Length: 250
Image 1 (tube, one colour):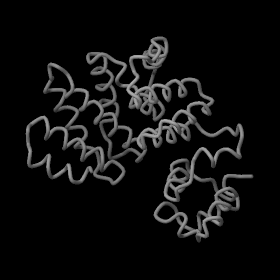
Image 2 (cartoon, rainbow, N blue to C red; image 1 turned 45 degrees about the vertical axis):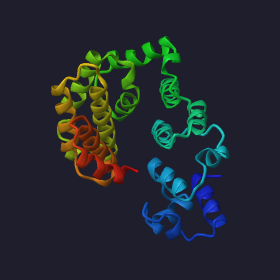
Image 3 (cartoon, one colour; image 1 turned 90 degrees about the vertical axis):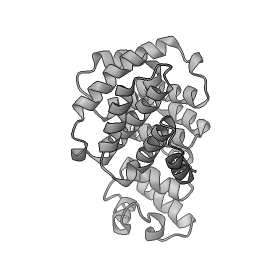
C-alpha cells in the first residue's frame, strides 16, 4: 500500500470528498494525483491533513513497516507532537526514527516536555554539542536540532551560536517558510532564555526581539511573533499590551 492509497482509504472511511479532506492544505486535483501515485505528498502537508481530520500519525504509519521516510518527516512529526504536548506520540516517533542523532534530539524534547532535563544523559548532551563543533554550514536539519536543544548550553555559548544563526540568515525574506519557521522558533526561544537569566543582558534581549520582529509577517510564524511581543511586554511591565495579547494566546 502506498501513502496515497492509504490517504484515499482514510478519506473514504470518513465519507469526505477530496476537497473536504484536504481543505485549505492542498488542491483537490493534486490530492487525486497523490492518491493514484502520480505525485508525492510533502511531509508538512501529510501531517497537516492527518491533524485536520483527527487521524493518528502513528496509526497511519503502522502499515508501512520500515519504510524509509525522510529525516524531515520525523523532525516535523516530532515538532507537531511536542507542540501538542503529546509525550506518548513523541516517544513513539523517537523509537521509530532510524537516524540516531535525531532520535537523541527527540529524547531531549521528551525530557524537556516532562520537566526531566536534569535526568537527560550527559553523554547525549555532549553528542549533540559535538554536532555544532563539527558543523561547517547551517542547514534546515541543523536549525531544527538547535531550535530544540538550546537549553543544553551555557548562556555564553548559546550567545555565540545564536549570533552565527542571525549572521548566516540575515535576509529572511528570501528563505522558504520552513526555514523562517525555524528561525522564528530559535529567536523566540533565545528571547525567553535571555529574559530568564538572573542578570538580564538587555543587548541580547534587543537583538533577539529585533530579529524576530524583522522576520516576514507570514501566517506560519504568527504565534512566535505574537508570543515575542507578549513576553517583552511582561518584561517591561506593559500591562495593557499583556492583557490584550493574553486574550489572543488563550
